[in-house]
Figure 1 (cartoon, rainbow, N blue to C red):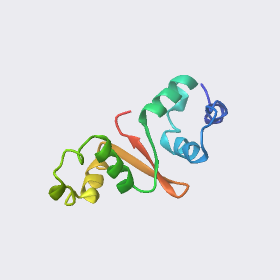
Figure 2: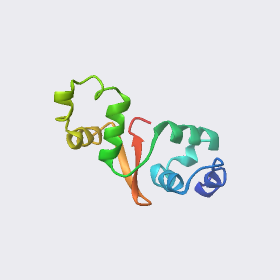
Figure 3: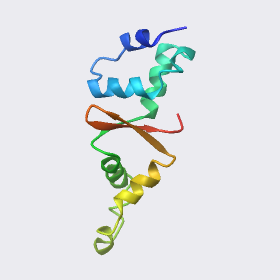
Figure 4: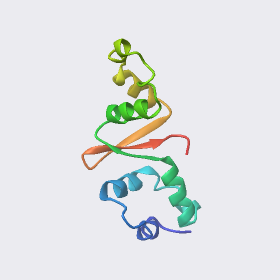
Length: 109
């Protein structure tokens, strides 16, 4: 069995402070069931980054998925990012406050 401290000693180079905080929040109960590399793999698959807010994440996701680009200009301005963020964080994603922002994770990992 490995400890959380051992996992943190294996933190990949370049791992930023806010990501370390996110990692500490994410899942420090189940790390003992995995090898360190397996645990990091699970974390990196679930971790969607640190954002200013859930809405900031939702805006970026909507643009990345092409939702906004496909809308006609006269409709684009009516897209409700607050509602989109609310819906995302009702099941597909969850977040934690870290270092002045929010760490976002995919729920299915």
